[in-house]
Length: 251
Ligand code: BTN
Image (cartoon, rainbow, N blue to C red; front, top):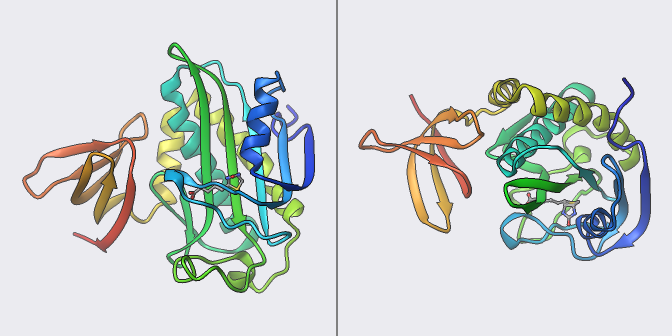
């Protein structure tokens, strides 16, 4: 069957945030698979209230509208599936060895190259729609000083000059595939995610969340995508949101 995602596109020169545009369109009834892409974002957003640096022509800034017939809890699986699709694209199609940090930061050589922001509208226990926003650093040679140590781009990693729409064209079939898998075989997404994440298992981490912070060793993901962290006293916590800081690879 032909790809469902990205069958229709809306391209903009400059928007505040492609997620905002996609959300407006979803509220107005836009179909599943519509993809919004912009050359520049003036107010690109990241997780946990952060901004996403989006200079004109230097990155891929795209948002997809999804309308899965699932309960709200499935939104976590969409997030993991998107990270798998991006990591596979960078590794297999662009030879930039990508690593996923829970839940969905995509890194190359320990530096962030892609961020994913999934925003879902929930009614009762059903997902009405989800907007999957993906930002990939492509052409940057330098970054704003607040993120300069932690960020990288496809140009810095591969020396290649890549057109954002070409990257999107290669990524969409992988997104389509992993989205479909996430709806029917969540365990396959979890397994692939684990293969693509060097910190999923046996890694000493600190997780900071609104509930405080915990330190422990990662023990993989639950069936619903929560990160399992084993504390020093042997207790296992299931983390559903937060920021993971990798301390060290542990035994
Ligand atoms: C993060 O790592 O914090 C997530 C960053 C997500 C950035 C993308 S760029 C396209 C879409 N529009 C936004 O405003 N954010 C997402």
